Length: 314
Length: 260
Image 1 (cartoon, rainbow over the protein chains, first blue to last red):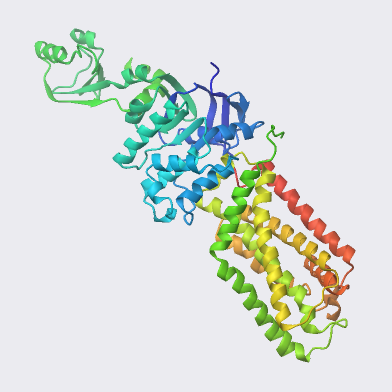
Image 2 (cartoon, each protein chain N blue to C red; image 1 turned 60 degrees about the horizontal axis):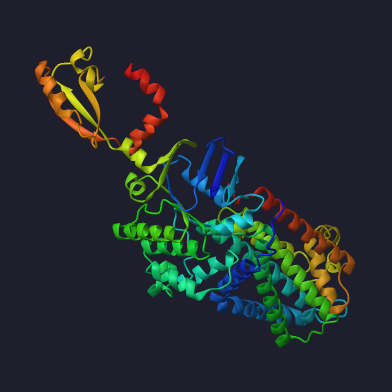
């Protein structure tokens, strides 16, 4: 099956010289939920904005269901729905009018039954005659989703859908995304919450400094994310790691005051207790221990700086 | 840039047009009352108080003479204000994202925004015309030409306003052109007098003000005569339309201040 979206060597350099996207290649599969992970300023929003027609690319091309986003923009934009990160709304409009407006703007004939269904699904039906300015932030976000769905898009972009959103709305949002997928809609969401990617996505892409540094099945990536670091604060600094500890591939930090051990929490044997036993056996005293989970940031750092971190370890 | 099939997105145009007209509707009272009151004030001050001491201009009573200028003055201002706000607001509140991501061509977008603003300007011109009738009797020599001229002016100035709305980066810039450029040009452009009444060198200087040709042309449709020939007036309207259309085409080609 051909990809629903094909991004080829997509580059965006702003007039300031800042390169927001650096030769990005990406295929999105029909019907999948794809999560684009990355720190702030990584290029997530720029990538989405180019595909949706808001930002002009500097190079490369994008095909949506086989159509070029520049030459056949009418077709590609009709296929796409976008929920941007910021709450941009017409404050004086009523909920139902703004959703009807969106449908018309995308060239679709008025369909009151469909609009009612969308508003009901998003718990907005009771508020349909309210002015948007009267709504809470969470309700406004629902309105923006309703607008994006009003023209029955085949592909839905959700840019940071749960940033600053309460727990209830987040759960509703996840539920809605699943329902949409059932109807065959392809969903691309950006997030910097691992939890969200873990909950929702089939595949995950990691973007940093405008480069797509990894695209993987969620399961594979989550294994990498399931690592923890054990830090052992030594009583006496070490010049080198004793041979007896070779099995654990430890690293020495802070002028020999700290030993670090990276382990997989999902493994049957983490090796932690054996390590501590061995430390006792060879008479290596320690003042404190602590563990921390590898955060997404750690993964980014690791992915981006792999060659350098090897040098440090050596 | 070729556009693939499906023809024109009429529903998209209609959606924006209705949205814009509804926006005017929310301020219908001020929109309609302001021109009526302003026109009445002009007639009381210029028509009755001063006009009674003025002789006829080119054989036309002063009260009637100022009607075309008054209509033009309001139409220039309102066209620019309405059209510039129409496109500036989505930029300001961020809703422009939806317009940019919609299957709308540049020409469709312009037709919708400028069409809505021009509709309001036409309505406004006709209201002022009707109000003027309460104070003076004016006969229109070329009614169809008058309507056509009004429409051309409405479209030209709404296009100009649209460009201004895209260019403006704050509310002050939005106001500065209609208030500090267009208003003085209109007052000095023969809205309330014939430029033949001016002494030299001002009479010649005035001929460099493009508004003179617009007001004169509109006056011609009323009285069959203006300060300059009707051909020259039409030439200026056409020139203004062309320049504005050219700028709009350039804006959408380059994405100037619309797209990053």
